[in-house]
Image 1 (spheres, rainbow, N blue to C red):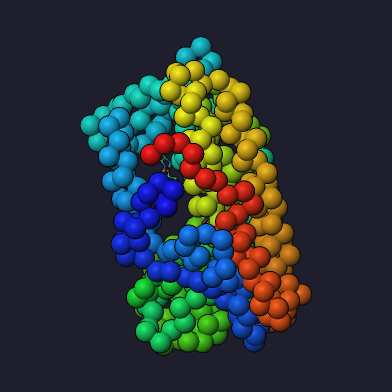
Image 2: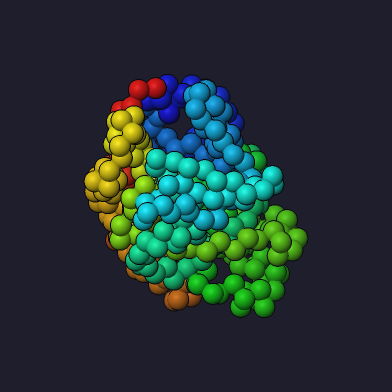
Length: 347
Ligand SMILES: Cc1cc2nc3c(=O)[nH]c(=O)nc-3n(C[C@H](O)[C@H](O)[C@H](O)COP(=O)(O)OP(=O)(O)OC[C@H]3O[C@@H](n4cnc5c(N)ncnc54)[C@H](O)[C@@H]3O)c2cc1C
């Protein structure tokens, strides 16, 4: 945002600034990441509802003449001309729409229809977990960190959003049916035991409609491109929620793609080698991050969910508890990632 010259306006939008991530592992509370030392203009994480963030980006985009945003347009197919992707077909409230383009960039997330239609090969890395997404109110004297709880065989993450907590309750894949069979009261009790200070407000979960099941996937495309088409973000590599870094990677892919493709696009000659260069640049951070996510889900999260026992403090958490300076490392991985990108194109 700073490199685009938008930072001050961006920070005028309602948001929360988070400087630490805390964890409750068994009976111990540990600070797991400290962002205050990040070598960045804003050494904190900004939490902002997605619609506010997207509205901001869309509004800025409109300042550029050729930018068009089509709302309520769903891509349903690709225009394939002589084995080259030449644009997309979408359905809109006004009917069918064809958009022709020198380059189509698929940023349609982990259920990407574009990558499926393009016939790109997906390597599935496997995710044994899903997430239940719910909200509970936040009181003024509640903590202000991002909080992760690993207790009594449960994993519960809380993101503070001002007057409410956005909560993620992690379940084994396909475990939702069983949870529902046990009933809502049992689920409320589980939350209260895992995070005792929420006991006075779990009744806000009036029915199962207040609980949304989100499917977790970790995968990546063997090749992120075809002639005329580039996939970025989750469409190229679906990320798990672990570490809260999927959005960073998606944005970094977009910045790298802009840096590498602005010149060829201006010349009107984007080659397959140009598209391959984007994948080469972003492949290492994607693989390294996914490797860590798989490690965390298999070694820590699945074990906690399976064991049903109170988690004991793993070695890494003990090190972070005893050596505060080490908390800068996870902060760096979450805040900057393995390969930060910088805007090089003119604004
Ligand atoms: C439960 C869960 C929690 C997560 N929590 C976090 C977190 O806290 N922090 C974090 O950094 N990452 C998190 N992640 C990962 C993160 O959501 C993704 O990595 C990130 O959103 C990828 O961004 P994206 O822009 O590529 O895709 P998305 O954010 O999925 O955006 C895709 C967009 O394309 C649109 N779209 C889809 N299909 C079509 C179509 N056919 N036509 C037109 N538009 C279409 C969608 O409506 C959507 O707006 C989480 C993931 C899960 C599953």
